[in-house]
Structures are given as structure tokens and as C-alpha cells.
Length: 288
Image (cartoon, rainbow, N blue to C red):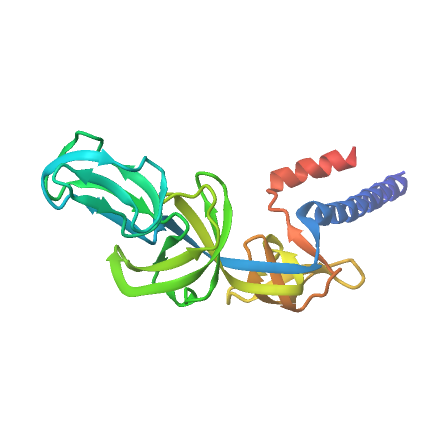
């Protein structure tokens, strides 16, 4: 009787061990699928940019002031009228006629017939709206990228308009602000429909460009204690997760160029970042 009980005890132990082993295998496979997400390396193009803020400026302006005191006898122009160089603007009661020194739009007209003006008073303003430019604020770390002739992509914040231009000049006399020095770059607008002086803009200049490159999501790349990049991949037999070193190039914050270690089509394992409690919950759901 005692031998029978002992034999039964060992049978129960073996059954429990077999069930535990089977559960452990299932847990191991399920854990791998729960902890990692498959991410595929792809072929594509990638561009990164320097980003700047700035303002639209008038390149050519004329501010007209009265040379002497007097009364305006005649006004020859209207607000927002286009005038040519030499066009008559207004005449004072002493016969003096004031003319435009440049062609452009009368953007400001501060007098009317009968107005009394004093010497030095501003009476009108003319802006050449066909030659607007953008003034960029450039910090000292990016100033080397802003050289004359470099193409610039411009977005007008108020209108959403997109324009292109090129750097025409860089003021190398910087101004300190906090821990940085800033410089001013001028960008000529190639077109500017609906753009006015004073509008705020954002601008970008190409930093890096990778064409037909192997690309991988940035969040699938890991870094070791020496800041060397690597990725997780399945072993050849698919039973283990291994680390594979890679070399990286340009990154736009979402995708990263892989210059060595992967080819297009390779599958990388991205850690899911799940907590143990979340992992156990997922495992329980998979088991039902």
C-alpha cells in the first residue's frame, strides 16, 4: 500500500512538472511577442533641416517728411496707389511740390488737403512691394549653414503660404542674448503674393539628404552605455533575441538612416515598454 502511494506521488509530481514546462514554453513565446513589436527596415529618402524664425521686411522704402511748415494745398495720390519714380505726391501752399524718389505703393498717407504740417513731420510712406525680403534670426551654432546663395524654404505663419528664396547676405556682427549670440541673414523672396512687411515666418535650410537609403524607425534603435547604436533581432533559428550593432546616419526624429548592419526588408524587434503587470494581463488574455 505504501509503495502504491509513493508511486502515485511521483506520477503527480511528473504531471505537474510537465504542465509547468508546457506553460513556461507558452509563456516564453507569448512574452517575446508581447515585449517586442516587429519593425521592418525600408528603402527611402530622408531630409533634415536647419530651422529659423524671422520677419518679412521691405527692402526699398521711402519715408517722406515735410521740409518746412505749411498747409497742404493739393494731394495727388491715394492710399495704396502705385506710383512711379518722380510722381507728384502733394503740393504745399507756398508752391512746393513733393515727389516720389522711388517707384512703389503708397502704404501710408498721413495728410489731406487743408492739413497743416510742421517741418520734419512724416507725411507719406512708399514701399516697393515687389522686392520684399525675409530677415532670419540665426544662432551661432547654425550660422555656418547660412551662406549667400543657399536656397531657403519659407512659410508665412499668418497665411500658411509657402515660398522659396535664397540667402543674399549675412550680417556677421552678432548680438548676444543670454548664453547665445545671434546673427541676421537676409533672404530674397522669389514671389510674395499676399505677403506684407512685418509678417512672421518660419524658414528651413537643407542640412542633410539621404537618397535610396535604408531607413528604420528611430524608436527601434537602442544605444549601449558607450552610446553605440544597436537593434534587437531574432536569431537564425527564431528562438532567441539577439543584439545586432548598426551604424546610423541622418535622422529626422522619426526615421533614421542605417548605413551599416541592416538591409531593406530586415525585421527588427522594437521593445514595447510594457510593465510586468501589463505583460501578465496580456498573457492572461492570450491564454483565454
